[in-house]
Length: 90
Image (cartoon, rainbow, N blue to C red; front, side, top):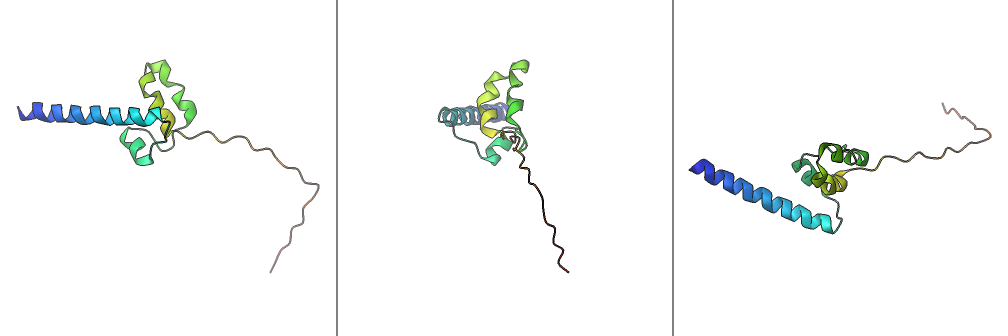
């Protein structure tokens, strides 16, 4: 009986956690790194990985994935200089 009560309480916690996270996702807020870890997302999660969720029928995780991911670094344009001076201080 106690195990059933614990499962019910755990189910309620998960329900309210998901309701709260859904409310946050409506406003497009970023989740804290701690909240993302609690949801099981890595701190190194790239946003391109969120695009793969649909292949595994995990589309319901997409809003949370997008709030926990980091954009890939854009390729920086290189600057070319005609020359350089190297000074060695002793």
